[in-house]
Length: 196
Ligand SMILES: NC(=O)CC[C@H](N)C(=O)O
Image 1 (cartoon, rainbow, N blue to C red):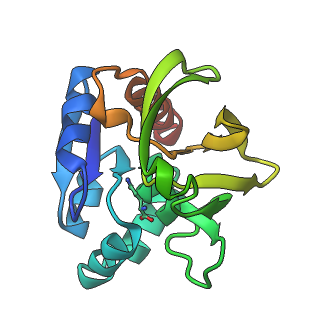
Image 2: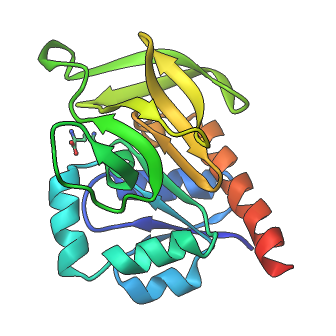
């Protein structure tokens, strides 16, 4: 059985658990770092990246999550989760986990477009995916090992680097579970590789 943990410190974590369960995998809310030992993959949800970082520090999650990723276990960051994964945040000295080679801009779509929906083609994952953006970041630049999976208005809104997956929008807020299913597949593949 594949178990996916959803970091449950702040933000839209319950909806992610529901989406994971819809794919047939087991979803658990992760509130203590010890739980990282019991899961095969981790989702970092949307919310507010600065608040989530404060709670990550408070509950001593920063190094354990980095180690989880370094061990080869997949991590999926959505919206604020994408910001937490990034190696560079435009206009800020702050970097959080810094495990994914992407440069992000927070609240990048501007005030008038605080939240909106768009149909996206996500390469190798889903065509016509109804993406919900809420004060979303976008990715300004990616490293050479990072694959761009989707763009909106020319801006990168989904990317993958090996076992790290990130998107600017909230895939858990619709009943379309294809991105979650893609992540579950990544986790199942990594389990096979890590067992060798
Ligand atoms: N929906 C979201 O996760 C918004 C992200 C938020 N604007 C941030 O900077 O962290």
